[in-house]
Image 1: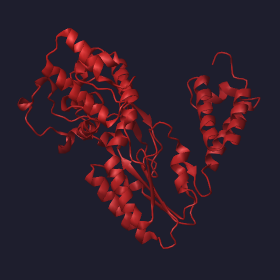
Image 2 (image 1 turned 180 degrees about the vertical axis):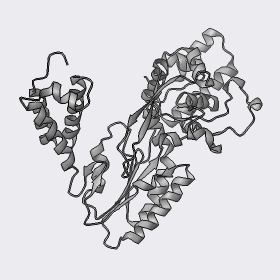
Image 3 (image 1 turned 60 degrees about the horizontal axis):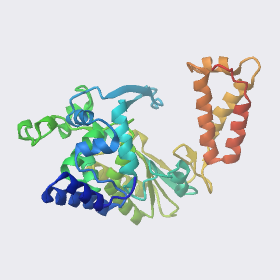
Image 4 (image 1 turned 45 degrees about the vertical axis):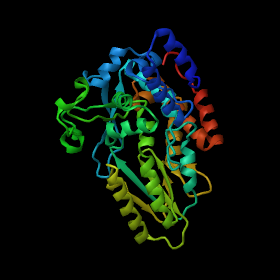
Length: 390
């Protein structure tokens, strides 16, 4: 999209007979947006968004007014079991086709120009996992924290504030926030919390069709959620970075994973506990809850793993467990009595193609971390005698 210029607006407005007052308001709203970033596209109304994104106006009205509760397909995927063996699931919400289209447009043309805090190392153009781990390599102490229900803890009010900070007018920011959030069912934990209930009565709403009893939240699975979460967390990241400095701590955040590290010889578990308490307090002020079971203090002699990568050397490395899993897959794929079809069945894949794509994805991940090893694994996978129809 080209940078916005006021001249075409004036020319077309004059041709259409638009009043000077309306034109001045439109130009002022547009200039407020491009003042934040010259490549941000002005969005003046919901119908204007419809023209820009190619998504029907009535569909956008339906999303903003929360008329249809079935705009997302919700399913659960199995997570790694807890230490006590209890099985856990993650809820994934996939937006319907036209909603996904407008969300992707918002990502490509609006959110990509937002600036998250420097401590944020995920969901940004050019962001790589290895870059998130590198600052902590070779550290004596590492502290790892996790945020519970990260995306679901970010309300549409916070999302509204993100679009306002990008220069968009209040009504447009509200409509964009509604498009980027969803309301869960009455059975979800959100509906039972006062924080997620509208405080003002519905009849005082300026636009009755937009009134709703329950606040929306970021859906895990929507294309807009990761970048919005980073922008919402900008203030929290700044505060956590500031409180980390007196401790001589390096702080980074990869989505809901917070990592702290230091080489200080004076750092100890007492200092670590003090830092953790302050971080918990900061998260609480931003409406976030730490996952207490996942808080971990890694001492100097302990094995250091950050975001699934070894961080005890000069640069990040793949773990022994990761390489062992790939070695197992290759053994059975290349074994004359097993091969791809039997191995896929034994590993629970419904099709050989699923196994093949999964392993090629692991090889691509390995190439980012240890290129020589990753390319060797990929070569062996490509040499496997995969069935023609798989």
